[in-house]
Amino acid sequence: MRPARFSLLVLALLAGCSPTTPLFIAQITTQEVVEYKNLKTNRMTAAVEEEGDLFTYSAMAIRDAKSAQAESLYLSGYHDEKLSPEVRAIALYQIGLIYMNRYNDERDDNKALTYLHRVLNEFPSTRAAERAEARILVIRTRAEEPVQKTSRELLAHWQPQQNLDLNKPSLDPDMTLLSRRAVLKDRVAEAEELYLLALGDPGVPRDIKERALYQLGLMYQAPDNPKASRDKAIAYFRRLLVQFPDSNLAGKASRHLDQALNQTAP
Image 1 (spheres, rainbow, N blue to C red):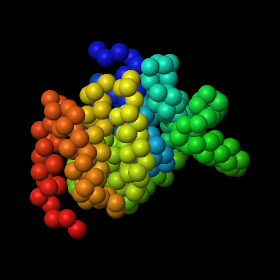
Image 2: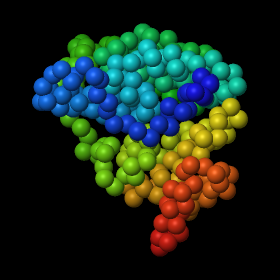
Image 3: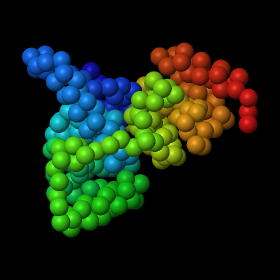
């Protein structure tokens, strides 16, 4: 088992984001199982639509009503002083995002504000602090709304955005939730910045750096990316193969690199 200090970025770079089914639903009907799965899937998609900075693990915590578990795990990253201030700030920021999300059954705006203010107070010069400040304003604005709907009420009337099909067939199956949304919403530059934080942090283990490079290559190779870059995709896949030749991702990276090299440059 990896040390707790590595948990933050391990979970941030999780590739899988399909819903899991608790054992208790084996006792109910097939139709109810389908409805339950749809509810959970919709909740996670709605949460990601509302907040694009959510890590895969954070969105799954909202989906599965595991906010406290996610909070505990992110705090292990925050308390690890071997990680950079940027990464530790992101840990607090993710907790704030989880608790402020309107589609979270365990939403707690006061707790979210506490964590977001901690980002500002403890890590004022980080990128996370800039984003935390904007989220604080969102919470304060929402508090002034005359009608406060619950997550279930919001979800009952939710319709997916036409431009955010996270299961779009053209997206590479290895792409993380973060990478998928970044491509579909033209926010690859922001996701790139996050993955580069993992690469530049000496406290992050090599397997996470390998995943970060692989995700960067996939994003810039994605045909759905409005700012797709053959050159950037090639550079990231090559960097993965040069820096980590024994990586478990080397075979996949090589195939993607060959594809990019054989692609006619625009």
